[in-house]
Image 1 (cartoon, one colour):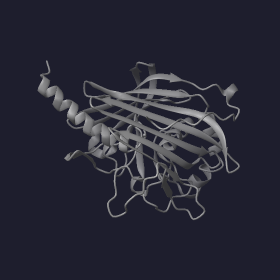
Image 2 (cartoon, rainbow, N blue to C red):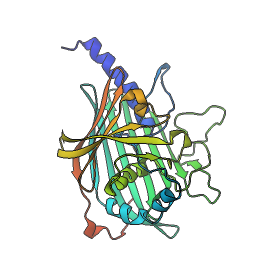
Image 3 (cartoon, helix red, strand yellow):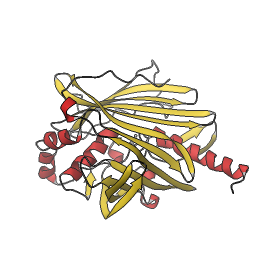
Image 4 (cartoon, rainbow, N blue to C red):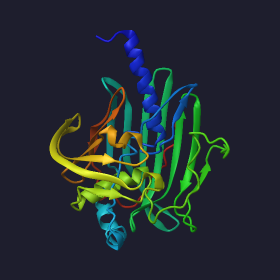
Length: 329
């Protein structure tokens, strides 16, 4: 039986991990993955963890011109099969025996931006930690040919702190461009965890945190179960390696699934470093939803598990736009 003191210690470590988890963008139940910056919390120790549910990672084989061709001509058809408006994956987030929060991934709508047909992806991560609520939301816009991200918005609430920013990934000069949406101004001399990423050169057809999750599913849909990713928009997380470990059968609240169990190693991401022993369970059957993610996050194990999967309705995927999600309150 856990003593009150031990329970408080577990909650303390869970809070540290989850804050960094949310910072990285997902995972947020996976998955929102990705950033490797340390997080401060009222002067107490730093901790590391990645997004797990943003974050999870994706799949783009590195194979020279063949990979480039696959990332252009073949993207539209296979990504179009995976991206169905209305599809929703709801996850629970657990640290050891403690239930920490929830994460939701949704294909929210089809829209038109600068004359391009795009899909709007949304992730909503909430952790109602006692006395310190975390609410992290990301909205991403992706196009099909080639399959790539064109921009994404982040809205973050951590305790009393709130911030929001937009990152453009489609500039003519090939550089990332970011801006605060809440009137704040980043101080280059004293960067903060709530600041947007720096302006860096982008790879060709870059992918953000949410796009890599659908890219992973897309690669599995064409028969690839071991692959690398080299298109993440921040170079320090490339190349990420995903290797098929085994086929298995995984039971979660959403049901029982035949799955591919992938071992994931991603540079610069504490959740997916080699010693984290991270595994991603992806359904064998189309449309290949993410079923579970596990990783060692001392002093416990972090698990994201599928609570409910709602497939989209292809008959309704007509390009009609929906309202954008409001920022967290």
